[in-house]
Length: 321
Length: 211
Image (cartoon, rainbow over all chains, first blue to last red; front, side):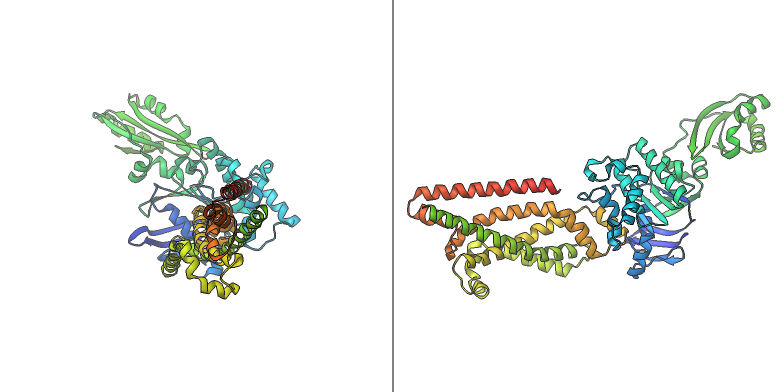
């Protein structure tokens, strides 16, 4: 378990993290989303001690992350693998040597049958067995990230930190990498923290997510809660505007989450209440395996009470715009 | 004539070889210190970095011919004499050390900071990062620096004739230029051209091979 309590961090006079408190459970995939400059990458680096924080507490499995205690920090870093936006592989080492590198830092021999089996096993896990002696310059972006993932797993970490791991990849490759991360999470039980500005990443794999802006957590919860009924700042982040809505009548936004999204609520409502309305805006999105969405309808002012009563009865969340 | 020239060629090779080898070994040390203490280094230290950097610049700004003369007492201390081919290695090495220190520093510091951060995230010590990451990633760039060094040392070794160092450059000046023996001048120059060309080609080949 990773616990952050009132974490604050400045770069000189600039406050990058302002009072961050979050808890990340074992075995979950946790997302940290926000714009560039929101402080999310810094937050990730505070967790594994790459950068220091000024006040508050970060605990990983109860142990305080403290940059002054170098030996203990090293031990903790061994438990936290990390992958990066630009992969950060060593150009002069081939795939095998890159994956083996962290073992060398720990003085673990890399040419014993055991070590060989482990390294080759990881390379197989990420699907690069045929590239084992290829250098990074001959690999595609997606393949490089796979090598980086194998490298991050070679010390048997309990946590995997992903810093914008798919931001430099195209959508199809992003999906493959996310599938791989999910597989690792499921099969090895590794806790994964993903820092990203990509909505798709959070939607596809995260079980919980926090939205960071200007060094503060503005919203935290399941991705569907965060994005289907977003707060103002999340809306801005998603650049999601409901477009031009009619000036007359009443605009009501409906949110479909969980059960309600399976039922044909809209058409049932039209028939049951015998009213007409126009659909002005809508979206449906996949979250992991579920579909959630929202819709804006325009109704006559006199129908408002009827409609909202009906929606309440059907347990559909709504809001008058 | 060929005796003179082949003897000179051996002297040139001798001077260039030893001064390259010694300056690469000695120059590597300040390069590592500069890299470690640079503002973006693993142990930033403004005082150490600036002082060492200034020292490197001072030594680099001496014209070689002046350096050759002012370090004569030092040369005598090291090799016991101030004249001759072996004695010429000392000023050549002294002038090459700051050069190689700067070239190696630049090569080392060109290492992708992301790779260094990755190494740190796996719990690597500063020492391991220095040698397993900085050094290892920079070898091809450093090799290019050594090739440039060898080529300029060939040029400088010609001036070593001033302290009786001998070598092809010396023969070209004394026999060829001062005694109007154009043949010597042409042959010595051709050998130097071929030598430089070979060094460059070998350097390019190795660069490709190891990068």
